Amino acid sequence: MEENSNFIKTIIKEDLESGKRDTVVTRFPPEPNGYLHIGHAKSIVINFGLADEFGGKTNLRFDDTNPLKEDQEFVDAIKEDVEWLGYEWEDLFFASDYFDEMYDRAVLLIKKGLAYVDDLSADEIREYRGTLSEPGKDSPYRDRSVEENLALFERMKNGEFGNGEKVLRAKIDMSSPNINLRDPVIYRISHATHHNTGDKWCIYPMYAFAHPIEDALEGVTHSLCTTEFEDQRPLYDWVVRECEMKATPQQIEFGRLNLTNTVMSKRKLKQLVEEGYVDGWDDPRLPTISGLRRRGFTPEAIREFVKAAGVSKGYSTVDAQMLEHFVREDLKLKAPRTMGVLRPLKVVITNYPEGEVEWLDADINPENPEMGTRKIPFSREIYVEQDDFMENPPAKYFRLFPGNEVRLKHAYFIKCNDVVKDENGEVAELHCTYDPETKSGTGFTGRKVKGTLHWVDATHALPAEFRLYEPLILDDEEETENEAENKSFLDQVNEKSLEIVNGYIEPNMKDVKPQDKFQFFRHGYFNVDPKHTTEDKKVFNRIVSLKSSFKL
Image (cartoon, rainbow, N blue to C red; front, side, top):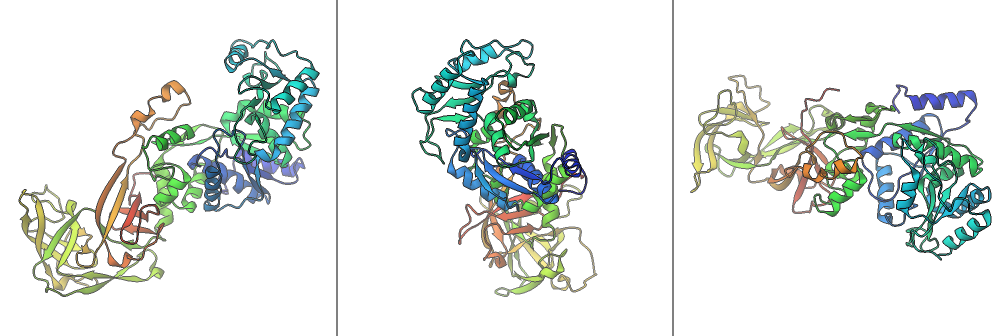
């Protein structure tokens, strides 16, 4: 973690200094029902970072208590994401590893008169629970005897009842001002095959019951979670105490991470994937770790971004441009410079010798001279950007137009003389002349030009596809958990969030590999797409543009 302190670090430090704790054990506990996103990265950085700082350890645990939503695919993806972010877990656990132990603890609660089998339906339980201003009322099954509850719970385990017929509830306080303590359901029936335990179980513990038991069994000292679980902390402590767990973990909550123009809800992300709005969970427009990786974000940039965003109790939304800032900072010394023309317009240099090719020298990265130099071919025909030419330009337009002279990056001055159009009246190619005295690097000082263009040699250029991204969600307001307000989130999907163009790249890029990153002159940082790149066709995802108005 960063050197600056935060309230969680302060708590841990005080616990160690006072002797309350003699070590630090944290855990990252995702449910394997989807792919991790940038919000999870905050939890990963906090849990692993704090444990590392205090010489402790962090476990990776899959909270797989809901077989209907979980899959091995998600388990594998989560493990890959954590490792890619640069962290190593101490031990790997599954909540399902403890199902026998959890069942025994539930039996203990029944024997203590602190749990009962309820026949009310889910709707009835919700109705009986009351509201924030009105207390709940007891279920008619609340006073079943210990013996009857033990027998019914065993029959639930043995598969004698259908889904939803019965649940096991903790017996706490139906008049508590905290609704979470109004006899919460701790076991439900689900006749479903589990990815880890198969068909051994047809009853499964609820998260609020399972999680504190898992933490206690693993010796977790500080159970770090987001603030939506703050109201459940009394239930967390109740389960640890009444289930007579030997270890007593402490739950501490921090504010979740949200980004502007970004969907952070697993449910919404799943909807975008399943309804075809995006190209899978690793679509570069998504905030999933796999999507960010495919787009070209680096683990170093994500870690630094999370640290800079800070740790607090508050619920806030961070400008997505802040994340992009850290990507630029990380890549500016790492990424080779190159030139790519995204929307090509052919230029014929009429006074350049036909059939001749010269190889120009250029720095691979001017900000990192140790990366060396590269060779760029130059000949009679080149490509420039369509946007770099205007037949009738406005004032202060310094790129190509009839009669104007510009510099070609790493090459010569060229002057536009003629415009050749096709049968539709569209510009087909430009005829220019070059001045051989103006070669880059020769120290020519005869005259100056105001425009510098990038280009690629037409004879040697390699075809490439460029994928340009804009925010997927147009509305930059904070997400709300209110379902009614969220129904229209698909209406905010930006139909222009992806633009695919076809152009050319320098020939020295023929051997690029998936996930190689480059800075294309004037266009920004790009990543070789691992999903669509082939030996014959290179596909580049734009990671970020070169500049931003964002100030850290």
